[in-house]
Image 1: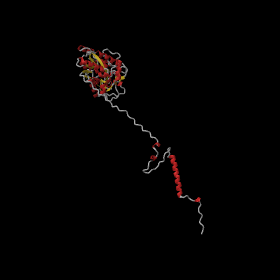
Image 2: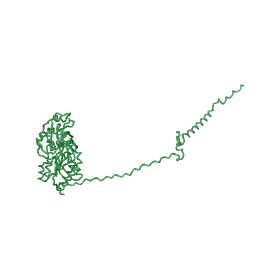
Image 3: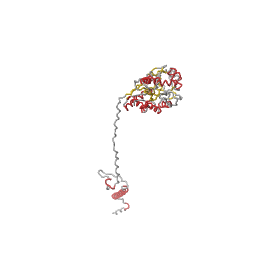
Image 4: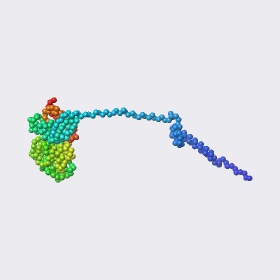
Length: 421
């Protein structure tokens, strides 16, 4: 037969699958080793590996612990300083009651301050201060007759009253306690702007010459205000009043015609009021004004604030409309008391100072110069406290404190009181 075909040459033979597998495995092994050297060494990251369950984690297959990077030693927690238990001071016991009660009466102007002082003073000393606001005139009478230990008045005693007291129980002295403003308060809900008055206008209102709120004289000081065509209801005090004394002292300075009407008596004058309705005490006038739309009255500033009543600016001798305030009261006091009379009787109305409110008054305590016995000694101590420590509590009650020059003169007066010591 025919000869067999020649065998194919080596160049044309395909590699065996077994051989390819072996060669491929070797190559992969070599690559893996090289990669392990490059990335798995001490300076390179290890490739992520897959392990079966139960396989020891790679970090646990490393060498001894000293081959691992040293871990920082944890910093011990800061130890808080020992807590010292707070020591609660023992409560301060109020002084035991002394059994001493000092009694006074008079000015309703000073009553809010006197009530506050009495509360503080009893807590500090155990001495009780009982004060009744019954009007300056009655307070003076009670003091003169020695019904009570002292009186308070917003109008200094007249020479005639001092003579009566001297004939009864001896010489009387005046001790200023505080200063404040008497305000023209009004009830006009529709008028939002603060009204302005001149002294002559206020005088004419209380004389009954100005009868309605839209009167040209009122409108002249209040341009732009929508004043109602409403009758003015005048409210004044019914009792002998130091507040009335301050008010009428101002009106007499503002109006020659008012002075002609006459003020009767003194120490809280009784007035022949040409017009108006009555209210007893500052609180009574404030209440009457609050209840009557169209009413006007005069009260100490704190009573207007207590009843949330409106009050006016008043034109002073410096031709400025000034609102009542602690600052404007102090300005009047400082200007008026450049020269203080030895008996400490003075007036603070219509003072020619630029920032002064023109209707300002003082409340005095009036008492006999001779104060024998325990009560007399305690009365002097209380008054000395009132004109010093007590002054710190006046601002919150809308009173102005005594100027330092005046307080020094008050100390001299108090030192002159004879107490039997």
